[in-house]
Image (cartoon, rainbow, N blue to C red; front, top):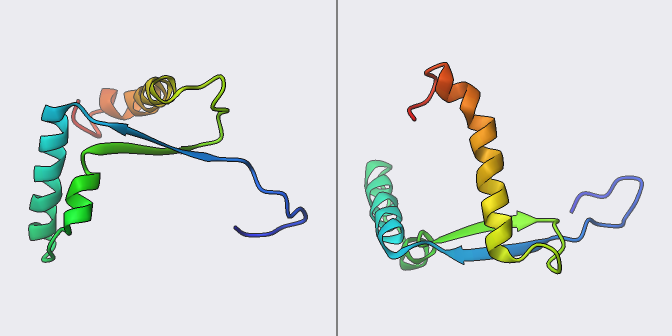
Length: 92
């Protein structure tokens, strides 16, 4: 943590949600393929982790259970990506 005028950090938590089995398999295959394309071997840990979504958030756990956090972040990403998709900058 970088310290500025205050040494108080922001409370955060790591949210880990398993992907659906088919999505996890696709993510693991992509991790292995990317590793080959970039001339390295994906470790067993990396391919295992590809089957999970991991988010670091400051949202309080009491009001924001993991699946609610994930749904909210997905919505935010869609809102942020919408202009780029509509302009053809990225594929939909």
